[in-house]
Length: 208
Image (cartoon, helix red, strand yellow):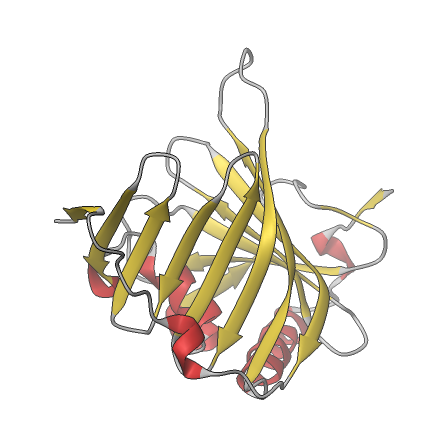
């Protein structure tokens, strides 16, 4: 496996052009479904990576569904306004407004309502954290300082600029990666898939 080097860009103009291509490609997608692997890594020598896997669905504008299958079942759903986190093991549902979630700028991009060229500044790679076998990697810092987001890295297919991996780095040096695989694009998805009906008797926790 090789590490992609930012130095492969011949100019800032080329870097900006690639970010624009990534934004245009993602904006052209009306929906997708597939699988994800999320890896969380703490800035601590004694900690070990925490890996979660499952299925993901997206419907423009602003709707996502994350079905965590391992290491334990959970369901994260948003209809673009409300977010539901259902934990069947704890038998509770956390409900909060999407607008109050931190790292909203990066999340806006995934939800299809943000704009990389508007919300971020491309820059040279500060660290080579994404292992890739030929993917195109760019690093972006938010134009406005966010409480818990230092920068993001995106790995995309160099031929069609489809998103392959997203990395989120916080201000404490902890980061997580979300690898997308087996993705199928522009499907006819039912909007009801992105709404959660709270079962009777379930404990409901309201997020601040």
